[in-house]
Image (cartoon, rainbow, N blue to C red; front, side, top):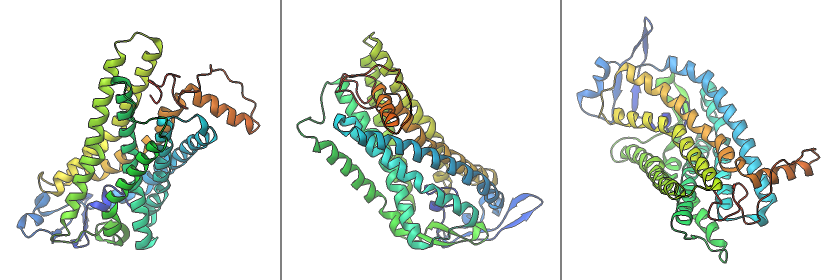
Length: 377
């Protein structure tokens, strides 16, 4: 999709008719939204709304470059995490299982990016069926990545703050069942994409074929607002609330200890939280503003429309970069993971000398500590 799956293709229905006219480099065109019967639909921005010609030129350059970069880095980084974890499966703990599923979700998410990059350049040329499949794949893995982060946060909170183990070593299937449940919930949340996504012409973008949501009018049109609320609440607010609460309590608990190992754990926790919010908060702010504009809670002006269009493209790319940071923040900070990685590289013929100290068998593949109270941080 021209901007990305979670913004542009949710913004318009097939019943919206738009004509464009560019005059003296100003943004001008008439707008008729048949989803609304009041006169306000033709009065936005003094009866005119902004054309997307400049936005299309911006997308043709910005999206292919950034999406290709995220695709390469995300696929290599997460693929490496998956390979190392599978190689040393016998030493897994609970957090390692979550990390494997998180890396898989991030990998599948970035695999969809080349399709959206190609759409920015040539329009959607893959047909409606593939539009539904790729769009739903993106949404499943987008939600799955965020929910898995929440699961890791909750597991660490119970383990460190309350000394309660959610998953018993006697029942290794329990954590796998939790991951499967997360995948199932995320698939159900992608059903609206399977139903409403279509390859169709977008009059706002010179009649190009685009992969868009066709929500229609009337009762079906309410799905657009439902999808946005689902994203705002389940896709950001709730996971953010869980992460903030859990890591605040973890930091408070660890702050009572002056041990070097625990101070290291605090630094890692801060890095996790900061990375998540730096990457996703700007995009969610822009999407929330776009929701207010689309629902007529804010006045739509030419400047606002232009800001939202470019803002969604730029901030979405920042959010996708989180898929590249996860292998660093959730894997490469761990001493044992680095040792395992060096073992894999040595087995492939690379002459690499280990310079890190080993940790106990009980430690996570990516944790600094052999103590299970701090594995997975």
